[in-house]
Length: 145
Image (cartoon, rainbow, N blue to C red; front, side):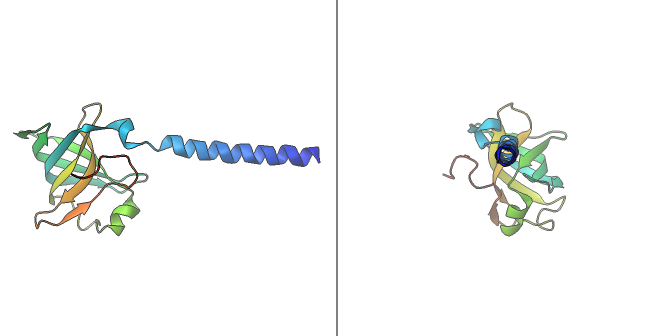
């Protein structure tokens, strides 16, 4: 009976440890991105990473609006924009075809806290005016105005 108890406790500890590791590995919006730094990135898709837990869209920026100031980009400036999971993006209509390299886009999002060229994307707008939500639900990101 004592051995059965020890075995049950060991299995329970393993389940708790594995669950905790997954929770710690996934970050909240506020851990990496600044809700006070909304931005718009206008440019062309340079690369897509369909990876879990978040897809990444690399945008060759042509114009950046940050903290109310718009600037034209000279030279190459690539921004990494975090989206929802690949499955979530696919369900919202974002596919490998709609996000093809070279596609012109406008990404509405929030800059990383470390001020690097990384952002959390909220919406992506295509040249035809079609706008799709690219974030993941429950991130803690600010609500759309």
